[in-house]
Image 1 (cartoon, rainbow, N blue to C red):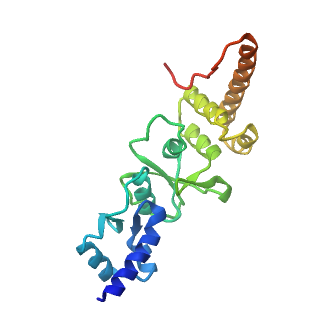
Image 2: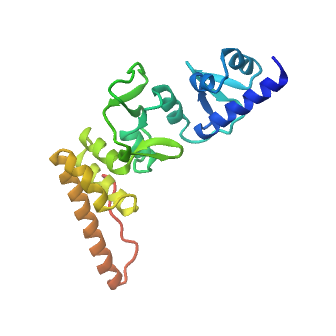
Image 3: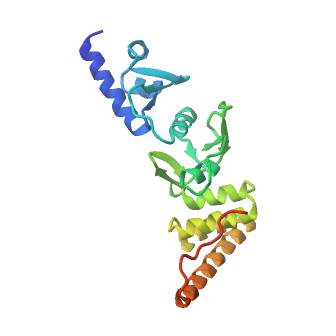
Length: 221
């Protein structure tokens, strides 16, 4: 194996892994013309490490946040999407990341991923976006998913209200999802909207009274 071939393959692997937090799959390498022999060579030289079956990491790539999400997404397949509680955490709408990583996959995809919390379903292109380099369900779809999955009503209202207050979603953006889901989802969306409207009115009243820093309670005490 020539030094030039090694350098070229290393550059290819970097281009693949760079937008994926330094990770890549053997399938991605094969698709780029890097077979098992070259992967074994780079592993032996200490350039890459195997983190899971079929998933590798560039050793010298800087560490960062969301690495576990990238590994889970690569393991679940190219059609997988970060969703539910994991999406909520990725958007900064949860106090901590869930113990299990939640991913939505097509009904036809393999479910042989025991370390992941898999959900099956059809996501339209309008319900998927990208955040931090990862495919993730949109805010509105994420909120509908966690509510449908059984999130406590009060916590659900707080989370939805927080998303609205942060400007992450508008009342108009909630309507298409809420009308497609169950009545409970729609009622919680409406409760969050009413809470935000009430906060705006209170804020306006306090401004006139000379008070500052109005806020909504976003968590149960």
